[in-house]
Image (cartoon, rainbow over all chains, first blue to last red; front, side, top):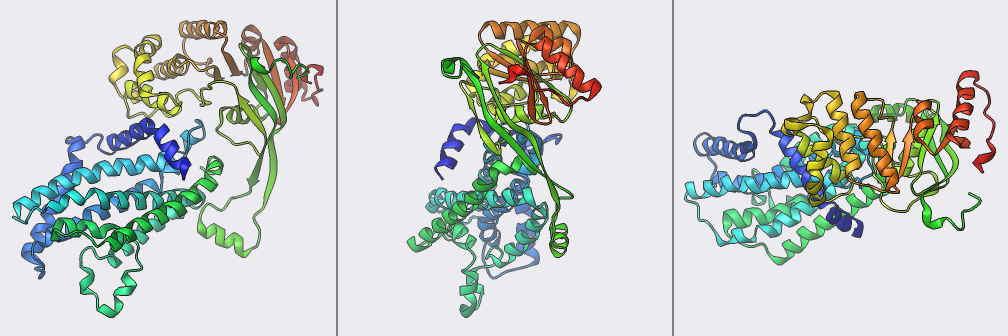
Length: 258
Length: 264
């Protein structure tokens, strides 16, 4: 774990450059370029707002904000995973030619998505104002769940990026896993919608602790209980220890399989 | 290596009994489906290949070492081990100083990025800081003779420009050990002259160069020492002219190479 911190710090400039490269290539050849990082969530919000305020009416007021407060972190998680799962295999040519710590590639993929995550909160803030939803002071608490989310995502990313080196099916499986995971996580609904005697089943899902803080802070204007915060960081660090542990064990072998 | 004891300081690259073993898996299962089917049949067949076999090599400061050998003799594998790309199966490599940790010039260039962005990315990949690269940027651009193209994506570059930029980045960052894998075959005559002039400067500055080539004339002309690899082992080591002769024998007659006395 010390290795992760030391190497990340040592190669911080490379990681940043790789992340920017990824974003640049993602938005290459589009007229609006980097603006898409803002426009994408903004347009998605527009669609959701129209759909849920006119067509499908839920009993939840300001449903778009209720939804987006956790959908944005979820999108960060699922996009990071989708991109980063290929980060080792996709940089195979590089890994075969340059001696560089392998961890920079998954970390850079996550960093690129962190930039997107931060940008996506700008249109959310605008939406909150536009819908006249209260703008709570608890927004200031957001860096805390964000940190837990990033640590959790990194851990998952390390595991899947390493697994994909050996079995390329992983990149496909992850898409299925993510879409199933999306529905068992209280994103489009609240945990309260689940019958009380089944809620324990949903609480086995580690990501609910990690993203819980976002909805509380943005939609309800509340702070999570300390137990919930502890649980979120416990899940995040468990994912990181396991994911990076596996990644580290196999990293010297990647070059022979990419 | 008889004088191993007293040259410690001047040895820049020390390769100690390095072996690189590959398991050449016949149809490695690339997907779970294949894994399952192999698993059901209870076997994954492979053979073991020692691409580099118990190689030891001391390269002193300021030497230009030519690494020669037939295709598949283990030259590139050895370079990759020295550069740190491969972790050897057995043995160790000590580098006394900084090494450009890439075995191919321009590794990490991305065709969508501009020349300027690629200079930075390439430098960062080699372990230099952004600031160090900013300082060298202009002299890299000048040496590579890229001109206004520096802010165009490198997919618009001619292959000559691409190579010039790659060579300029690798040599401008000033590593103590430079690895050159058959790059001087490209570029026009004028640029080749410039490259060799720079290589000479490098050597005068006491830098070490590991050079892989199939061109015996180049090796004889520029290298202080040549090492011939055959089937992963060092079979000749010493004066480039003599080693080149052994190489000719290996290539033309496909003789079983004799172990040269200079090797040990």
